[in-house]
Image (cartoon, rainbow over all chains, first blue to last red; front, side, top):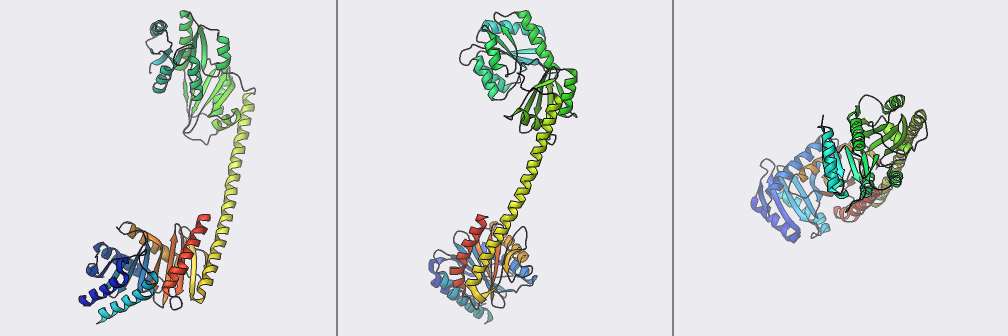
Length: 123
Length: 371
């Protein structure tokens, strides 16, 4: 992965979301340690690495479709986690939903993040 | 055997000393305690096991009458001999319920006192602790032997007493219940951990029951049967009522699903509402096999993972973007779950979350709270 480009994509998200972005990290599934981020949270890398593995496994064992581009967990205290697993990498971000413009986040920011993430990884 | 303890309650120190000396000389097995007013007496009775009380009526701070009233209110029953310089007949009528076994007039006749105290304490020594016999059988034995005394029944939540004289049951008490209810309660053999003891005391309990033992036992059995029948009917009524609630809840959930179908139109692929306990849909539209189990398991895992982390716990919903351009939304509310599968090509995510989902969650919570 091109870390410089990944950091550039993270800066774009920071600009778009402003103070609604509480933290974000990108890590490899194998290592579970952040390789790029903003207000990096090592606990988040370990936690969402495990959660993503569990969801993938549960869906694989079911007759349901598999996880595609992302999943979202609405949390208590007006927080929201968006997780984008892609190949060997996972991009996670924690949002303050009181400050975020959800329409912009869901319809514009997330699709842009996915597009940028895919480009960085495949190049 | 433990020594028997006599509490002397009198404000006149000379009398207390005289009684102490007299009773101590009667037997080494008696120990004497003293209180100089009613309040002190109640303090001793609260802290120590007393076998007999010699109680003066007229005292400062708290009189003997107040002590009797207090013991009666607290449902404490123990043998009491009244010491009084007054006419005992008025007191006898008023307080014959209170465990009074005799009256001694002042100035005291010490020979009489020793006789009465000795008789009460010897009777208490004969106290029987009964195991392996039903209360009905004990009452029948006491009737045959024409005994006089008090049966005390100690249970986890209530204590009861049956007063008998010359073999006849004269009164029954158990935590404010009527005589019939009390006997029904005390005879109920389904109550476990009961301890029955008998004291052969010449109590003065007024005769409130004018029935033979056979009549009393039959009446108690009838009351017990009625109680059990009522309990069975109550259980049945509860079952019917919970079935109705369940049915009403299912109808309300179906209405929620109708609303969702209207909101999403053909973007709605499938949906179902289920409970953690049952794991099968209570209401749904194009329900999918095993979906309930799958999302119950995932929700349980997410709750556990988040609750053991420093992250906030799961909120109102979670969303999976799935292969084949679909979105799975799960709304867990307590024991209830609502799973929704949506065609993401036909519904923008922002619209789904901001407009539809917030309204659905409110309605879902309302139906659950109402049930």
